[in-house]
Each structure stands twice: as C-alpha cells, then as structure tokens.
Image 1 (cartoon, helix red, strand yellow):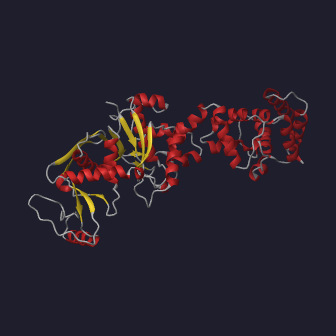
Image 2 (spheres, rainbow, N blue to C red):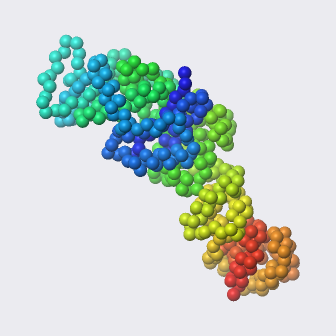
Image 3 (cartoon, rainbow, N blue to C red):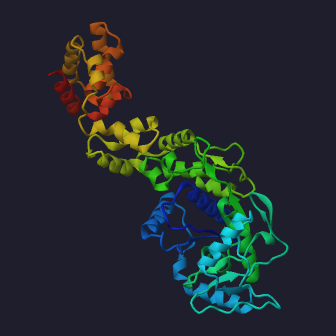
Length: 464
C-alpha cells in the first residue's frame, strides 16, 4: 500500500506556525515511507476564503521547501463530484432531506438549552421504518443530513492520542449540504480523503470532534478508514494558546523578521516530536528519523529564545554566498545599496557569527556601505579632545602603510606605545568614527575590509 498524506488548509488567512508544523509532519511522513504528499485547499467557506490567503499558503510552503506530489486540489472545483456522492447517499438511504426551517431549529435549540439538554437535531425528517414523515413544505428549501448511526460507538486508535471512543448517541445527524446545494466542510473532507486514497490524516487536535462523524460517513461510503494522528496545540512562551499577541505566528513573518528557513524547519520539527537528544538536524535527517510514535500527546510550548539560538547557529553555518542575495535585499529596505567595494562576502564572513537574525546582520553591516551617524553618547565618551592628537598621528601613519589587517594592527600598537595608552583607548574612538558605535569586531579587520581610502576619509571627517 502506498502511503498518502495530505495537508488541507482553509484559505482564510496566512500559513501559521501550527499549520506549517502539520504540513511538515505530513510531508516528512510521506517522504520517510516513500509515499505521496498531497496539497488540498479547502475553500468551501466562500465568504472567508480569499485568493490572497491561498497565495500566502503557497508562499509559505514554497519558502519552507515543502514540495507536494499532487495538487493543489481546490474543493470549490470539485462541487460536481460532491453532488454525485450526495445523490449516491440519498439513493442508498444514508442521507436524507431535512425541511426544518431555521426558525424551527433555533426554537428547538432554545428549548433544549433551557431544559439543560445538549442542543441537537431532533430527527424530525429522519426516515425510519414505519415512520410517517411530515408533509413536505412548499416554501422551505431542504438541507441534506447524514443519517448517523444511533447505537454503538465509533472508535479509532489515534496515532498520537491513543484509543478514542465516542458513543453514536452523542452525535446527531449533521448537515452535509446546505439549502442552496453547496456541500459542507465535513462532507467534502470525507469525499476527498476517500477519493484521494489518504492513508494517514495528520492534523491538529481541534479536529478530534470531527473525526467520529467523518469515520461514520466513510463507513457509509464503503471506504477504507485512514489512520488518524491528531497533533496537540502549540502554546506561546507564556503557556497560553499561541495567537497573534505572541508576535510572529505567520510563517512568512518569520522570513520577514530575518529567520532562515532551516532554523524554522528544525524548530518546528522539535515542537512535539523528538529523536533522542538530537537538537540540530537537517531535513534529510528528519525524514529518515520521523515517525508518529514519538509525537507527544501533550501541548508543545513555543520558545522564542530556543528559535533564536537555532537561527544564530544556522546563520553561522551558512556560507556567505548563500545569504548574500537575501542580505542585499534587506539592506535595500534600509535604503542602503551594496557596492562592489567593500566586498559583501568579506563583510559577512566578519559579521555572521555575531548575528541572531538576518535583519540584525543587515543592520550591523550597513555602515560599510553608508557613512553612519555616530551615536552621540559614544562620541562624547570616546572621541574626546585629549585623544584627537593621537588619532591624527595614527591617520597620518595609516596613509603610508600597506593596507592589511596585520599592518593596521601593528601601526595602532606603535602609536599606543608612543602615547603611553592602552589599545582600547584608541580602538574605541576608531570604532565610533568608522562604525558609528563603540562595538564591532576587531577594528583592524573592520578597517581592512572598509578600505584605506574610505577609512581615512571617515577619520578625517570626524576630526575636522
């Protein structure tokens, strides 16, 4: 049997972190098993589904590299298929027309609620042997309801949560087609999973309550029941359900905020799943290791500090060539244009081990390509009148030497000795003049990359 998994988002917003984890786990399981990963867009909620949301989902998956083998399939393009299955179920007696009006159902719900009962459909139009149905009204277009079994239990061995059993008496006859003929979400999911041959349904545990209804409909269609794996929710750093208030919950927002996809994928993989003590691994390793047995049934907690640590690791490990185009774009957003000199690769080699995210990295190196406005507090503290004669002497010496980091360092040492100073007493004002702030990598390396002409120009401008 070929393993077939699916990711089936509703296009009512961006691809959020929870959805991305679901997609990742479904993708990895198919890869591990040599199966197929299907993308399905569940867009039957016409009022809330938008083309922009579809594009946001596609962009998120593309950025993460979650390639699908089949699809994308759009439910709204499969309406004719759903209508054929609806008719098949009506003919088989596993579905029926219900003419109860909206007002009737609201009154029924109110009565049940006041009586302390669970609100549910009363089966008024449910056909039964020996039962006489009411006269069909002429002014009420019917919905179609699934004829759910009334006895026994529906049960499944959830691959994450274990054995789950629900009494059929707890389930009423849900609507599977609205009174305008459009099929409902739960029904479309069933038909799609059946016709697409889905073998494992990996999804969030907010769908647990849908599962018994869907299983009963699959049974009514004579379908093979897929295995279900319901992933627990993701909590924010504060232990509350992850939401917009926690910051970036859109996958593409993490890209905007300067995270590498490798870090996001690695982090998502560890949200509720583990392989021994392995913390850092690539997607090839993840697909080799991934199974559903090591997904924890308890909620996973998002840890921004851990994600930042992973991101710093992947930035450090990335080649400067690999991130140079991205950094160039981020610098452009800061209105900084990269020039041939200084060489961006050399700049990145100097700085990337210090960065937690690409935005920070771009901001930190911007001074190489645009003369910075020096921090006033640093100027007052380090660029004092008593150090300026030393800096002028140093600038004169810099104009005559061979421009290498070693020669620059040597020249600073000579002037430091000449004036009886400590190295930082000279290095700190140099940083302020060249970088705009008092913190940077080794000043001799900064100056070497910045270039002799630009270095001397900035020192001269600061001392006049």
